[in-house]
Image 1 (spheres, rainbow, N blue to C red):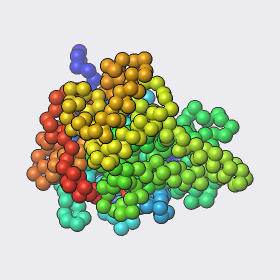
Image 2 (tube, rainbow, N blue to C red):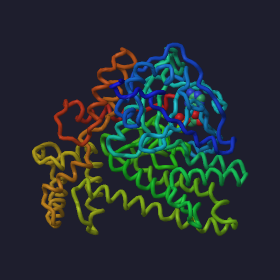
Image 3 (cartoon, helix red, strand yellow):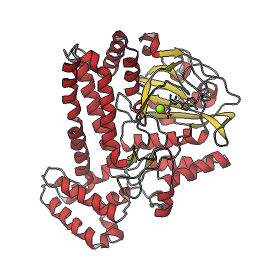
Image 4 (cartoon, helix red, strand yellow):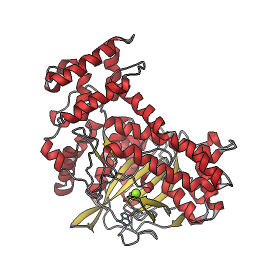
Length: 492
Ligand code: AMP
Ligand code: MG
């Protein structure tokens, strides 16, 4: 008798491709283009197992599949159509270098997209080569997994597979394919695409599909399309507040890079802020600071207005009436964002209850950090670490003033300081994937074929709130000159 547990066939995949029920204008069937010599260079076994996939089988035999040379049984590869405002200008887009293999249903019934990014040209590739370079794919893996560990909604990275081919940008780079897992890849730009088709039935199909897939609780509402807008507004308000609470800069918040289900998506020129300043921009292409750290809530609002415009025909037959209705919803965004943000700041400061002056208390700390070029992550992390409070900013007069205001505030709540410290430790990360560290490990991986530093960094960021001892290089802020010169690139 067979005593071992049964081998999971098909690597554990269980595809059910509901996107294909949409009108065919929403996608083109497209198989990935074969690559020369696929090798899995990074596999997220923990994620694979949590999705009900057989990590060991993928590791042994999966390279052909994760490169697109072979197709998992049940996958029905497509490229998705979408549009988007890129830096404010509208374009028809679509998956130009990504292919959706299909939707996997996990053992607990969760539906996730499985996408290959960098898998060859599609009908939406325009002049692009459909490929991706190893560095940027490893970078997306690191940052998205860091975001997940921080507790922020995000697409996930299942694997990076090298292709054995070069891609040509400013120079030749090793090519790679990222296997991306997402609750879905439906974007604000997918609705803009549907609206641009000017066929109301297509727009309605998409909206009904999204409601069914992501917001089934509103299916029976009389005003379900307005509720759809409201749900996306709520999710984005919560998401952007979380970004702002950890110092994350997305870098390219085009409407095609904003997910309908509230996940952080499309990690290109993103980065974590070191020295606190709201005008911080790292992206080499964001020359006007449109997507600067402090501008992210405004841009999210702007993007949501584009979503609302797309939904107008579904919301009311009278455009005037529809505009009136969405305006009320949209006007609520700044307040909703602010409530999430302040709620996050209260936790970062160990506050359990609410006082009217909490906003001022939080903003005073940020102003102090800005004026004194303080490190965002370490300032909050040190606040919760009494043992380390003899150093750095804790000796500064202006900071001492703020500190005593904060101490009085803590004393006015019922909970003891020890509880506040515990609360703070659950939201103030000890470490983030700092730009200098990320560059260092990418350079070792890409230039020296050495994945060890990258894997070490991944283990460190997997547990960002723990008290565990870590090498100082993981928590040290980089020199300010280095930080100021740091630039990120799209890598497309
Ligand atoms: P992104 O800036 O990554 O959000 O991409 C914007 C658009 O350009 C999307 O439609 C992408 O699919 C497309 N794109 C980016 N890089 C490439 C590439 N190398 N080949 C083809 N299309 C690309
Ligand atoms: Mg994109």
